[in-house]
Image (cartoon, rainbow, N blue to C red):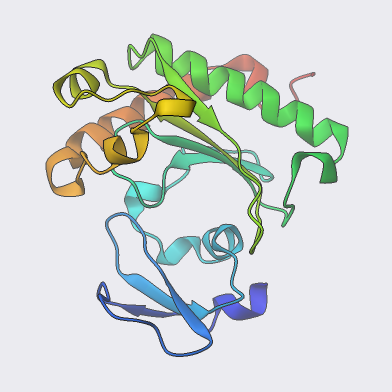
Length: 199
């Protein structure tokens, strides 16, 4: 997948259809990138980090597992636990990596509770059929926004997709940066996540 990363072309947000054989990758606070249609978003983000907006800088990175603000949705504190290797599903990785992801996800959730005051977070892991790259979404359920817009987060009767659209970078950038700073500080101060910490 790495060979496609260098062929990306940053462009202003495109309302139209990409040329045949290409697609646009959109990123929060930055230009779209026109890439070969086979380019995996996870691999692009890992290999072209210098071209991503600074708001997407990892809050945690141990060289294999990263945690950062979601790349597209402007929900403050919307953390994504991702991996650098191109692995599509949990059962395709070795057990040590799966356990490390569980440990890191545990502490991200603690940071969201203790630093961001979040009583509820929805955690998703989907296996894409097209260009899979393992990641775990940790979506904060901000109670005031949910109440103001009658958002029901229950999976089988949810309007959570609408919830995602209620946040814009223009209105929420300061909150996003505050949340990332808080989560970064918490994870940096967590001894169990430091290099060399025993499992």
